[in-house]
Image 1 (cartoon, rainbow, N blue to C red):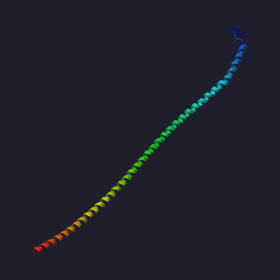
Image 2: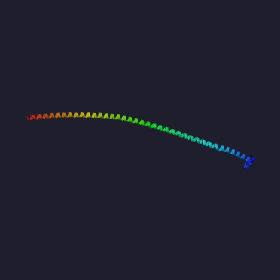
Image 3: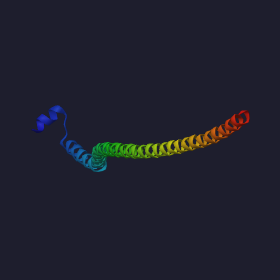
Length: 147
């Protein structure tokens, strides 16, 4: 074996020293570089996983918010329809009341006008009777004078 190593120009002491140097360098790089790089990669993986989880939670919150908004809008529409219905019913009642009041006033005005018309007719009749009586007296007086 020694002749084979000599044939390729390899010195066993140097080979051993290089192997020890390689082991020391491997250990140092592994401790000083590889482990911190793995730690940083793990931290980044955790941050990315947290970001993905936060995105899922935000998506679920958005879906929930959309459902709540839809429910609130539906509730508001239902309430608005109820308010409009009650307002229409109240308006109908108020309209009926106003119509009834107007009809009562119209009937009162008509009754008052009829009473005034009857009073005016009676007054005119009385005045006519007085005038007829006066004219009859005058006619009788004139008939007596000529006779």
